[in-house]
Length: 246
Image 1: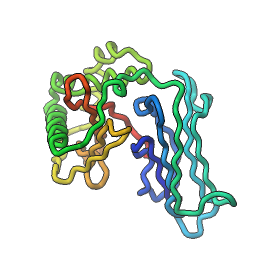
Image 2: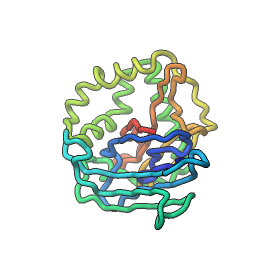
Image 3: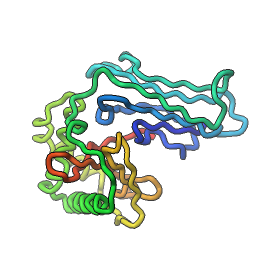
């Protein structure tokens, strides 16, 4: 069946898929203290004669290096075409408040964003800087732009932020440069889409098609872009970049 799953406004599974899919994705950098929301949509059957369509979404809390399905189930939704379940199309929201969250700093220092034109201009400037830094392989500029993201990602996975910064060039940059594999595509800033997610503390930026603005389509490279504004200086910073299963 065709459906979609969102976590605090972040698209985990897009409704544009035309085939049955399954997978898992770590939510360490996205789960925050207080009420979190999972939104599940059932759109329609993949085929009119599709038998036994179903949609499930489950969130587990597991310890580091523990298999996810051996962890504690903290949120769950299951739908099948059976009596007592809503008929297609439907939309269901599951809320939960975790008793334990990764030791991230972002949710302590991120402000709610109104997303004014001034905000969009600041974000565009960061996208330009990031695009240029990647294209020119400017390690100093990229570390400046991605230092908070790198440290935050380490904290989210209970690793050492200092060690990840030390390994930034070898692990992050060399891997990214290799994936880019050439010249990045030109960005059409007039077609950028901005979406507030995560309790209005994060801006997701995409093209009109929903893809990342920073791409090398010929090589299959794209870099998801998320931005937050930090309380201590009022400037936007690159939010942890997460690879999503779709």
